[in-house]
Length: 364
Image 1 (cartoon, rainbow, N blue to C red):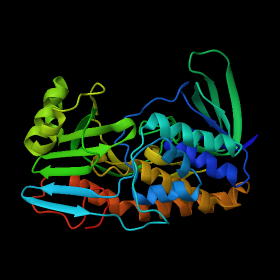
Image 2: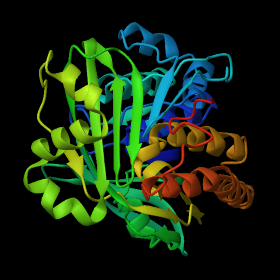
Image 3: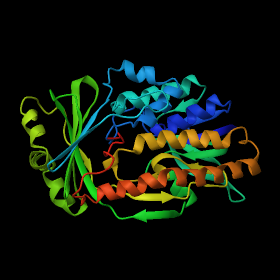
Image 4: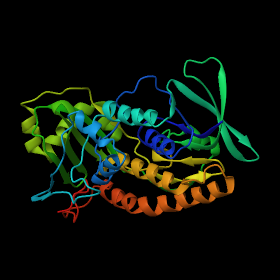
């Protein structure tokens, strides 16, 4: 029997599994993917997220990938240009935007080094219940075959916005708002290694330097445009860059597109109930919002640490665990709700005046 079973081995899952194992618990982590690939992501890690990696002694491995530190941001809104530098947070002052094919394996490796048993290529087919309490999972190979039953004191759903665990426990939605934007992005070579955002009514563009000299170039559109944009995403992206950030479009002429266009029109905004008897949700499984403020990775780290702190040494006692999970749910909402509200404001893309704070968290 395990103390914790973590379903999902990406940002939220690997971080949670690592912290639980470091606390002395026996942890199983399962994931559907056989090989870790890039995920749909804006890549950006805010300073508080980088501070978490520093605390966990994982930051040196990220830095070793060659991902450039992002120490300044420039935000352009019409004729107004704002530049900022980050306040030092937890001993760090730079943000980073590593490729997920590099970041996720680092976190998985840290989890395994902490003692986590990791099973890739494994799907969760069902949850196990006893007297209304989740007591484990039924797993199998993604390709099919024999099922296995694994039991634990706590099952953690870290399996994304379309969470199997959330569906299995019928986690109620506590707060939900409409979709506001759709986003498309690609990676471009030979752009200046500068973190920049540009906004205009109904339009948003960002350039985010990442590994190997590449820059993520993203364009946000109003959700109502999704059907039209998805039909010719590359042209829509380039047109949006040209109208909103003409200097970037000019710079792109000296480089080349490195990958196909990635994007989504399914940027949900919600909080699900975070916990119940024997289960808890972290990361996008429990809370998701528009990516325009690039909070996903940082918020996942925050939730992983918050859960580990709340659980402490109380995991094996059902009554104490119940109290700890309720405390986690309350603190999660208190911690993340302000950024949820400000993200929805940004995602409406109707602000004509410059903001008091630039969108990716660096103070003016």
